[in-house]
Image 1 (cartoon, rainbow, N blue to C red):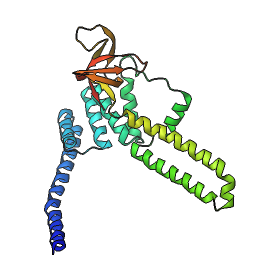
Image 2 (image 1 turned 135 degrees about the vertical axis):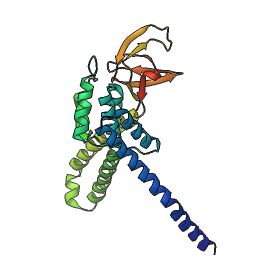
Image 3 (image 1 turned 120 degrees about the vertical axis):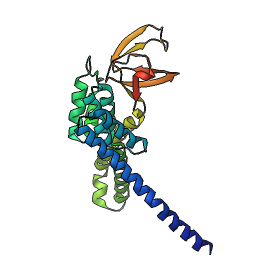
Image 4 (image 1 turned 135 degrees about the horizontal axis):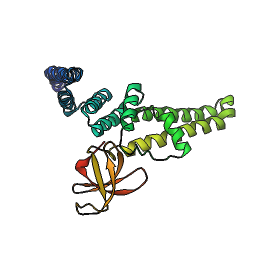
Length: 253
């Protein structure tokens, strides 16, 4: 009897909460399309507000961040535009329109983008796997790891597999290592990068308003977050120079 009552309770809960879920999805779609309408009308502030309502509900997507970036760009807020393009790039790195808008926005950063110099092999690996999201890389790693196990297992029973096993395993291990490095870098950077969202940000030697200014960062510049103290972030520029900025002058992504 208990199992029967449990089954009826589950059915009741499903039918009780399904309408709520449907209403919630309808509201999200309504806010999203309302934002699109505001954007087409040139009402960028209202569009941003509508998109943020979608985000506050717990939903996110590459297209949502992309649209936010476009609205901030049209509104003249370069830092927040680049910030949202960065977020969109993590979710849909293969989108050509996003890449074009992102690159154009970065070209407007005062003093240049300041991209760090990378070794040729890291640059090559980045180009090969840059089109994959973290989830895509995780799936890819799982497939390559499975292939490695299958080759090892098949070599014990199939002569021709045994013959080509050393070369095959070497290639698969190289691919696995390269994709693992890329996945590790992407995961380790999540929540540890920031974009300057004010016109300028004075980077100081110490986390105090009275501290000496080390150098200045400009709106849209991307930095790495090293640590935090009260309302200050210790950041590192592309050239490895470090210092402290106010947390209100940047946004972490």
